[in-house]
Image 1 (cartoon, rainbow, N blue to C red):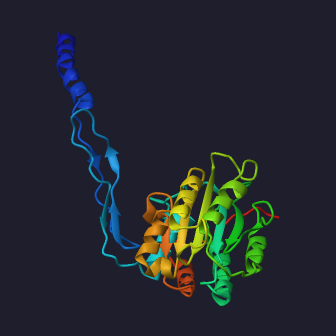
Image 2: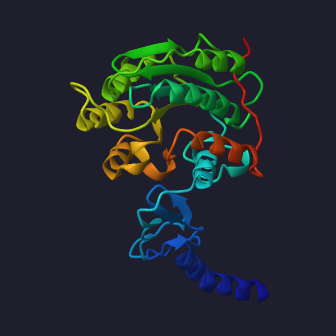
Image 3: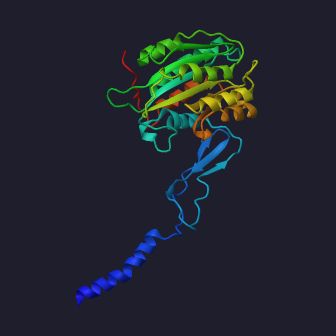
Length: 306
């Protein structure tokens, strides 16, 4: 008799449970909004999906909310965003723009046009070389990051390829020895060169755990025949099919609204995770000092030993 009663109860409850679990109308379920973070041009906050809607359930709505005030982030804010979204510090990996544990084939694309000047370019080399030592996290034994450096102005130069400078010390020494050229800002030519010459088949690691990345460091507006902003954006769109594009802009890329908007059109989406801005070359030093003193900081770069 008890068994019959239990079976009857199960028969009554099971359809209700099944209906609750698999009901056609399931609302979207979201996390709370994360805190606002300062980005170029204002602020952004985000939230994540815990459960997607089904049937006629309520949709999720926006996952990002912007408050674009026109204000640019402080150098300290830029350091925090660079740490989280580009460097991939293991303690700040949540919400990063890249896969934190992956290796990198990274191209540094350095503007050395006449508007920069030889003095600032010398300083920039020092800052970029130091920046590489903050790339995190350290990969497992036997894996490593690789770097190639391309400079551009009136011409485009591959200074060294992925396999030519392997250890961190070799890479930094090669960066310190880069010559300054001056001239125009042929950004489209440089981006096309990276796509067709550096990221050509056989030169990069075509592996699922290797991220192909470009960090464009520039002070602003492109110029020269075939290098209009539209030409540059088309070149970046083509390169973006193969690699993730980041940009670190200073000078007019910081102060000019049109140059900043142009830079936003070059990087991988979402733009605020791939673009970083400083007002002056000298602000690089403050940014690096901030990185060195962040609570989450660890120098954990792992380049090939050579």
